Amino acid sequence: MTNTTKIALIQMRCGPEPEKNFARAIEFIREAAGKGAQMVCLPELFRSQYFCQTEDHKNFDLAEEVPGKSTAALGELARETGTVIIASLFEKRSAGVYHNTAAIIDRNGKLLGKYRKMHIPDDPLYHEKFYFAPGDLGFQAWQTAQGKIGVCVCWDQWYPEAARLTALRGAEIIFYPTAIGWHPSEKKEFGAAQHSAWETVQRSHAITNGCYVAVANRVGHEAPAGGDGIEFWGQSFVCGPDGEVIAKGSVDQEEIVMADVEWDRVNEQRTHWPFLRDRRVDAYAELDRRMID
Image 1 (cartoon, rainbow, N blue to C red):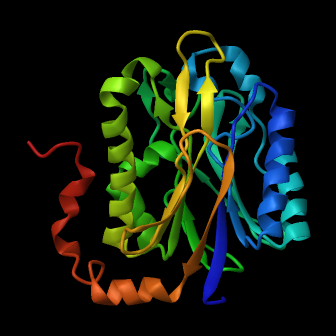
Image 2: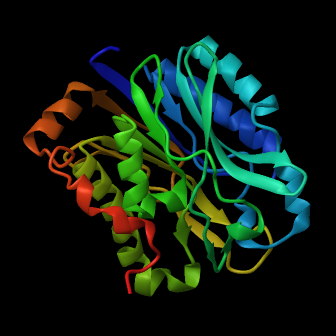
Image 3: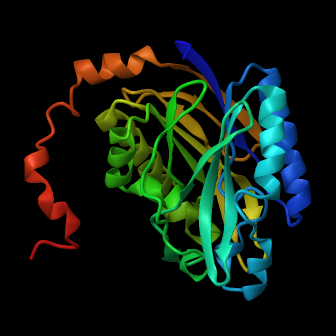
């Protein structure tokens, strides 16, 4: 493992045609690799518009097997470009069982594994429980050619337990493929606070676990079923083990957000702020309860 790795987050618009989105993602990955990126993360469910805005059985046709056609193509691209690729896909596991899944592909093209989104939201315009079963592979970390990484997906980013367990598996970067934005009718009143909360909670994961956090969000307005739709707020970012943001995208533009990860900083931060060392592991048994009452 080299001491420094250049990572790239692909902040992209997603249109109604999966093939065009996939081709665009490949262009972005090649461009990022040409700029020196050694790890590349795509946004959540990048092959399509965010279809979870409605409950429509036709959308199950967007799903695919993992491994499958997309991971094969991305594996070839990883070998071609020498990059580690994190790709969020709509996985068809079996008849009636689907997952929101991230594939982790090493730079030699090998599929190292997959992570199935654990926390599944059900909110206005985020009807994911209709489509996705909760993940059953647990929180994981993978040793890539560049370093040891973990991956969680979007709604997972609000849960400190998810980040903690991923870090305890050895992850020194946690990637979060994401699709989050504003309801246009709420943006004026609540928009700034919503975005601030989103960024703050993920920066806190970096601080409390002494690791890098890298968040790849989509951008643009999508209303695939009509109505107001969602204005995805972009602002993909990377923060260091001290929680400071070291790279950040715009609110409304497609772009490649790049940052240098200095692996030695993880051990440095964890020895200066030894939160993992000082955990009272004997005192947390009740965390497996919904409420303590």
